[in-house]
Image 1 (cartoon, rainbow over the protein chains, first blue to last red):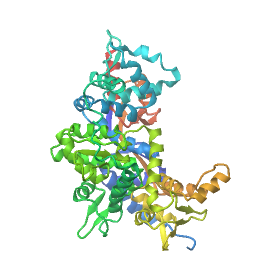
Image 2: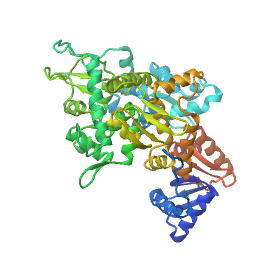
Image 3: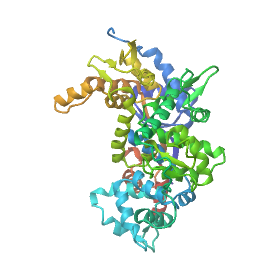
Amino acid sequence: MVKAVIGILVQCDPSIKAIIMSIDAADNQFVVEELDDQTLVIKESQLSELKRRLDEQLKDTQQPPEDSGSD
Amino acid sequence: MASAVSNLASFEYLEKLPGITFRKLYLEPSTALAIFRRMLPHLAKAFVMALLYMDKPFLLTDLDQWVQSNAKRQRDEALSTLSRLHIVTISAPSRQEPQVVSLTDAFRVSLRLALTGGGNHQSFGVPSSDAKSAGIELEFLDEYGRTQWEGILHYVVSTGRSGAQPTAAVQQLLEAGNLVSRGRRSTEITQAGFSFLLQEVNAQVWTLLLLWLHHAKELGMDHVEILSFFFMLGSLELGKAYSIKTLKPTQKSMLENLVDFGLVYIPPSVKDQFFPTRLATTLTSDASALRSITAGFESALSTGSGTAGFIIIETNYRLYAYTDSPLQIAVLALFTKLTTRYPNMVTGRVTRESVYRAVSSGISSDQIITYLSTHAHPELLKASAAKGGGPVLPPTVVDQIRLWQIENERMKTTYGFLFKDFESTDEYKKLLKYADEIGVLTWASKTEEKFFVSKVEQLKDYMKSLKAK
């Protein structure tokens, strides 16, 4: 029997996906299904929370945007 | 692109309405005509026109013969739009009877009336023969609509600061729609408010009207009457006086708010007449007409503040804006790092940081680019014309703004449904093909036999029809 699962399809870089999986590993409250290394389905209600957690994680690794040149 | 936004907003709202609401809406010829000209793709219009004077249901297989075989996707999309808007009914597929298509009765009757006239429906408004207010000129109406609308926009941008404030009803509406939020001391603009500001005027009007529609339900107003009134406004003629007496009670009570928005004008001396402004009469124009009319409106908008274009942006991301309008400066500040303000101009730079900030508050790079190019200074236009009509903005700047957004967008998200566990590869292939044809497919994996769609209703019907065979 065909199943239809409601959710949000997330398409991103493999690196971002790895981070999402590591966030999810703690309590499994985000990911519904992994599809391939750039695609996964997450729970409908958790998008904003996931975005927030992702930003938090990336803050440590990413260089802050710098403003080159003078005015 | 901007008109697509407005299309989407009103369109998606309409699609969610139940069939019964549509039947009531289509009782008004003006609504049928407005939906027909504003919401339908051309192929769907062709179908409707062909079916309009056909008294018997039409075989779906015959309809297919009008469409070239390589345009099957467009045909499916047209039909699905039509049935979502309850304009056509397609009989359920079964083994005994072939599928037939026909226009819904209310829509057929109303569209016939709208196109060929007749009937006593007063759906297109009743022009007032009273000549008491003959002195109202187009320029005055444009000016009036502009001032009212700019007042609202200005309130959204610089909420809390002093200046001309829109009426309390409008303020409440903006707040209810989450375009501004009231803090302890002052009101502040929200993310939704930011993207509202960067929309084209017509899209803004629709956004506000739909907000109001949601709000009106709480006030116990019938939303069918409200919607038909919107569509009626879109069919009125600019510069003509219309009679208030023939309106329904709900519609009369709406007029007050429409005056606040600047969509209609009621002369103080003649209380039983109203004039639609350009904001109202362009509500349901179709996309191409819309562009020229909004262009006309924008040039009308700009008469107050000098020339149409005022922004110069250089290849080094420096931006000079010749304006002293607080509204325009506030909009620019949404995505520019402004540094200096002179009496007649402001300067600043578009930086990675400022674009980041804009993107994170819900503004897309395309919105920024559209804004910059529609408000480009005549000198930029002249320069691009001299090069044989190239792009108005420096290509490096445009590319960089897009890149900055992509850099900041870590994932692309789509709401919808994942289909999996098919009974057979054959079933998977059939459903996949259908989903692709009706334009809802977002992702598919052949090896795992799964796919993701953004809408599910039609697929369900299709699965039923497969079972019936």
